[in-house]
Length: 121
Image 1 (cartoon, rainbow, N blue to C red):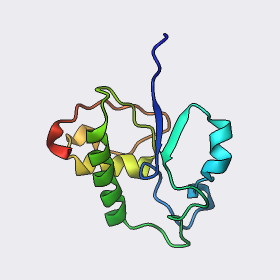
Image 2: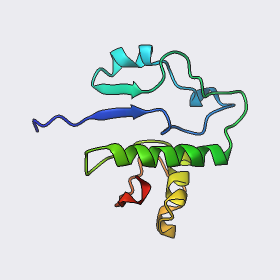
Image 3: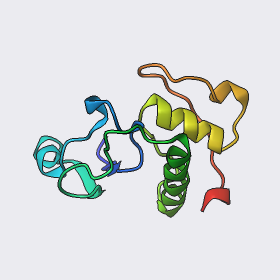
Image 4: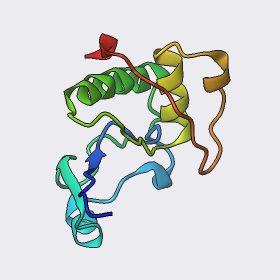
């Protein structure tokens, strides 16, 4: 396989933040040398400005999903793999109003396939 596939890190596609230290991301300055093939231009540099000692609200996760859907609409690719965490992905599938079979809890390494239309652009 010789075609270059873009790997893009996007700040909004992350676990619900706050309370748990494991939900706080590392800085781009630390991640970039470890993952040189990843485009980090959609992540703020420096410390995780979103993480707080209180848990993020479900409403805020929905806002992140909507922002991400708009971002997806700007991409030229027609097939995109989204890798994230249960809270974000569960909210994603509730926001897009997919069938009930897509709305349940995500388990580790679970894969679900959907086709999105231009409605979200």
